[in-house]
Length: 171
Image 1: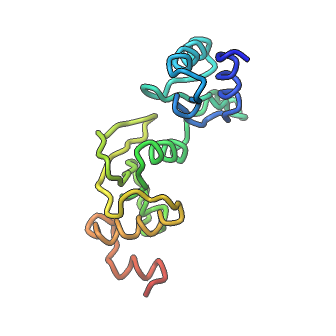
Image 2: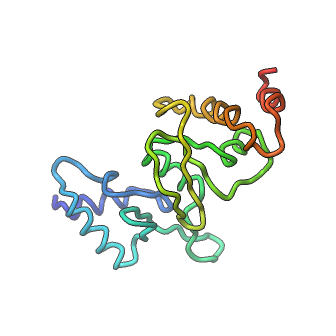
Image 3: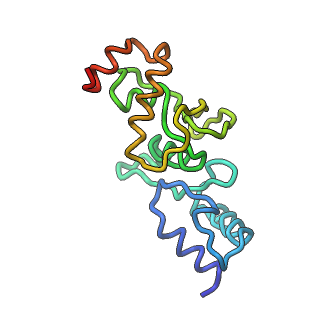
């Protein structure tokens, strides 16, 4: 099987609306340049879209006739938490845990490796230093978010430390 055909098969196996890059598809027998060339050919043919440098997705079409759908916030967050070895934090994370009713426009990622604030499809991402380091177990993420909330209690909209702990059933 040719390299190009193998790359196309791997991309076709990815669901629409899921972000991917060359690291997603690379294997020992493939060169990064082959993957990049395939990306650009598929982009030119309109089969995939470029989100930002090196990051692509297959467009998802609305079943209601509204055309192409943007990549959803959860998928953007999943991809960038993995890419930056970070976990969700800030107002977005606090909202996911039910610590605040505020719906954040910016997703804060807490990690060890700083990155510059950026925007992807009208979703803003910023960095804060993690108080717990890199989490290898996904079940630890809610605890890390709670720790971040308690550490940055002044930034949790409308809540005191006692209210946060009570809401989580710890008091």
